[in-house]
Amino acid sequence: MKGNNMEYVENNDVLTIRLPRRISMDNKAAFDSEFFAVPVSEDRLKEIVLDATDLQYISSSGLRSILSFSKRHPLPLRITELNPMVYEIFSTTGFTELFHVEKALRRIQVEGLKELGRGMYGAVYSVNDEQILKVFYGMESREDLEARLKTVHTAFVKSIPTIIPFETVHTEMGLGLLFEMLYSESLADMVHKHPEQMEEYAIKMAELAQTMAHTHFEEGSLRSRSEMLKSEFASASFLPSEMIAELQEYIDLIPNRDTAVHGDFHARNIMLLEGEPVLIDMDDFSTGHPIWDIACLYRVYPYLISLDQAKADRLFDLNGKVPYDAFYYQVMHFDRKEVPLFWELFLKEYFKGFDEENVKRFMKVAEFYSDLMVIRFVVDRCRPMANQPDQSDLLSAKIGLIEDILSRMRQYDIRNLVACLEEWR
Ligand SMILES: Nc1ncnc2c1ncn2[C@@H]1O[C@H](COP(=O)(O)OP(=O)(O)O)[C@@H](O)[C@H]1O
Ligand SMILES: [Mg+2]
Image (cartoon, rainbow, N blue to C red; front, side, top):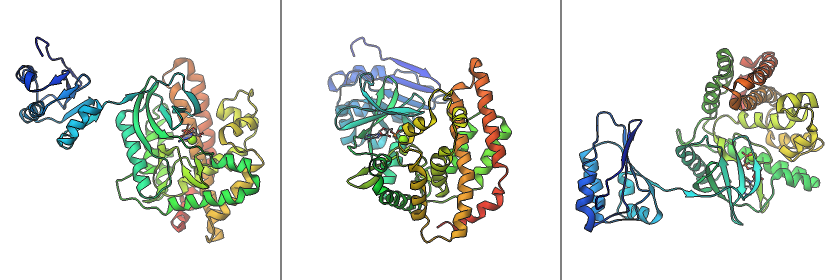
């Protein structure tokens, strides 16, 4: 520590103290004299963070200093940026149970990696032969990602077939998650390649949807689909407030359930692993009524396939330059001929044994909520435009599009129609 003053900084009620390279018997006295001299205003602070970026070694006497410090200042204490060796010391001594201890995230450079796919919130890259990286464009916090990791683990231990992320990492584009690479194709690609086996694939997908609809989760172990969607709309402050209220009211009409909802269920988010379907893209995995997944499918299959070029231009901003058929294939990996056949086979299997009249009602409700999912998509496209004066015309056009979809939705007697959802078992 010789003459090396300990760095500390206070920011938004958080006091961050940077730990030195070594804390051991030989420098304990010097360390303590600086550590305990850091001014701590307990009544003002919410949390103390010990930043271990530089820390290479800590002995048990160093750990005791941290313990005494936390007793002297009884505020929540978080120890961050631990390298794997130092983390090991904290973990074997039980410190990881006493305090909130965070490993340093590994850094991975995205530049130069091969891109496998790109969505609205991020992109997927192959890191090497065994790993893929899903990067979220700067919007997610570490806590969000850890929560996602936990969600997928919660699903996995309930036997939902899915791919597990194993690490949160830093990249120059934002935080990301590492997954094992699946050397397999999506269910959509398999249908396209082997149309003669379409029925078999549709059955597998319907069985997977039924598995989710019958897998129960303890209260609080997952987020609720309805709450997630409501808070998404609530955060769209660029929409007129009556519009937000109307959308939220529609969400509230759907009964809650403790069963699984994927949230972005379609045949490109299912990989076939030795013939068995495995879910990917688990960002919206949650609990709720199975109508949410069926409405999602309704949107991507019968609804999107029904659009003509002009409507697709308006929804996807193709500007009449990209042929819609090609665009649809690029996104869904299905073509116009395949979709109606596949959709029919899926529904036949999914609703096997259901009352026919009920199924007709369910499909009306699914049609209505597929419009709500289209609105959600449009709202997400608006987000980057909000507060950009040069994009205000585009934003108004998008809000006009939402208004048009809402007027179509208002033709439904949805408040009465939803009663049938209780019959959906
Ligand atoms: N574990 C994986 N192994 C191989 N390819 C993957 C894996 N995860 C995703 N991909 C590829 O990346 C694409 C996008 O990933 P996905 O998680 O669905 O993100 P998005 O939210 O952009 O749809 C997938 O359609 C698939 O082609
Ligand atoms: Mg996907």
